[in-house]
Image 1: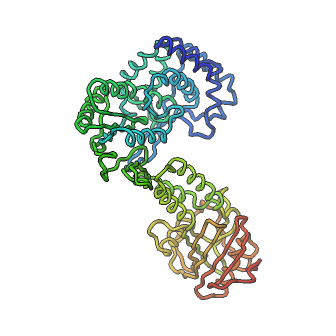
Image 2: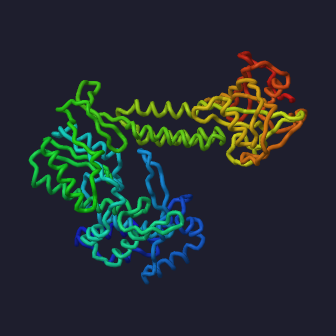
Amino acid sequence: MEKEKAEIASLVEKYGRVQSLMKYVNKDTLKESYSKQPKGKAVGADGVTKEEYGKRLEENIENLIVRMKKFSYKPYPVRRAYIPKGNGKMRGLGIPSFEDKVVQGVFKEILEAIYEPKFKEFSYGFRPNKSCHDAIQRVNKHIMADKVNYIVDADIKGFFDNIDHEWMIKFLEHDIADKNFIRYIKRFLIGGVMEDGKRLETESGTVQGGLISPVLANVYLHYTLDTWFDYVKKHEFKGEMYMVRYADDFVCLFQYENEARKLYQLLIERLKKFGLEIAEDKSRILPFGRYKGTKESFDFLGFTHYNAKSHWGKYCVLHRTSKKKLKIKREEAKKWIWEHMHESIADTVETLNIKLAGHYRYYGIYGNYIGLIKYFVYERERKMVKLSTLCYIEQDGKYLMLHRTVKENDINKDKWIGVGGHFEKGESPEECLLREVWEETGYTLTSWRYRGIVTFVYGEDVVEYMSLYTADGFTGTPIACDEGELEWVEKSKIGELELWEGDRIFFELLENEQPFFSLKLVYNTDDVLEYAALDGKEMKDFRRREC
């Protein structure tokens, strides 16, 4: 597609307004778009995956081209999905069908070829080779090198949901003369949304999640905001003023307070003309810069930016992870760990390390050491320290054993253990015990004994403190367990089962009526027991025991 994009760019430079764009939507570009679509992504309303579409790729592409030439091709309504926002609300995303992703991939490349030469240098969102860090560096440069004393920190309310379709098409027609290309853009805009099995009309907005949505959003803001800002800067203001925009997130920087306030009022009027609205509760004008020396700060792109001094005593702008983003990241980590608590510890640690690396790549900028440490300590503590209960229910000389056979990545896969699980927030050991037993067996315990604390150390990263119980009284009707199969096993035959080596030790302690004990078990990452200590004293003979 690079050759085609270069050709389109040259036409833009030569003529300004381009036509005959549909010729670039052909077999080769569609197949290339197909190859670029990642595997394993959520499917759209049609339920088709990349793998399924690729089984008959040639036939599917040929059929698609025929339909597009006849204008019988119509996009599927996107499937609505929701992700949490930082304010506790949910953000709606749209998942296109796979074929629509393929088409949008080509349209996206064409639109980028047209508009990249036109977009302003202070526009950074969803553009090639223009990252969030680039935008932050530009803000830094203006504050530290230019005459900046005031900042307009503005927020557009529900930008993606409120893009006016009529204005969107007018902006596109200003640069594109191919009516058929515009026709398909319209179809994507009004394609609708599937939610709870019902098709909802999309009379405004561009659904987040579509491949062309980011570039269309940039086109809309290019004409409603960027070009307007450049115009008023040149013709209505005397002092220095700058803007840095990343998608719909932007800041304006000013030399004079009166001009900052004037621009803010003009901004409200300007955006209103195009169906957009400033969220006034999230927007403000604040003094900031080398000449102000205030303790004010502002948030932009997940960072809190504040006035500071370097090690050499010179003025500088520093950044830390914003409290809002840090809270969100911590909650996400907490949720993920709870959802995957029964998986292999090695797999869990590996995935968490990847998550940490991704966090560091974004937030690891100069001056944010404290923010990184706060996130690392929080996630490491959750990764390293776990609290759980385990209970062996007795009846007629038998223990109720759980054969863990269901989950593939379960650290206890194919092993026989008691019933139990990890603490929920605010639970005592007894509360966790009663809840886990009821959830896994259907039984309500009426009589139980707290027998000991077992400290598990796995490799160098994970520690788990397990409260060990036995129980000899219960009521209720047994249920099927989604962790595996429950079976009453004669105590004399427990040793014949596939057990953890350390479990054989505390089974012996339980049968010998050992008083309340503290047992430490150290495993390597190959699941081999390397060390055992009872009540603080090393056990020399902990190897293979018979129960």
